[in-house]
Length: 158
Image (cartoon, rainbow, N blue to C red; front, side, top):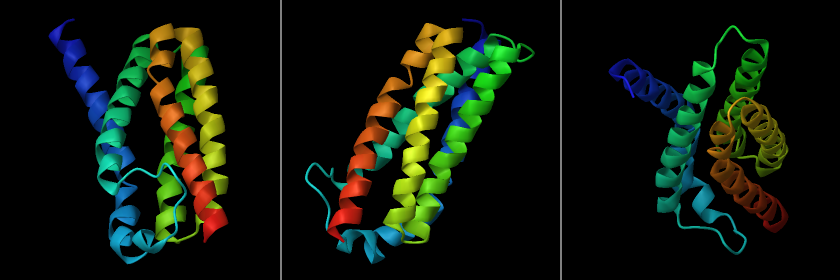
């Protein structure tokens, strides 16, 4: 891989990491003051797991995004895929502000349901353009599936 491509790849990863981490503005202050007191369903991972998992998932998302972007930003199919990706990333960040910022697991559940659908749409569009770009998003879908289960459990238990 050329130096220019490596630099661009790291830029995409960095941008997705920064955008994705915006949710921590709502999350971090509310963990000790609110989240830790919620009754959680079985399979809830310890709090320390979430940071490394999200960092890894955002890196995979940035890599996937770079692969699609390299296929040609002027192509209609690429523009559509990038739009769907952008929407799902925005919904991802929004979830933190609804769930943690507003302390509303119910709104979080609605949001994460929409996120799950947009991740599937993103995978579908990305696979159509580049198979590996879509496959890189499967761990993200699996993690959000677990998060949706946890969110639903919190709604039911609290």
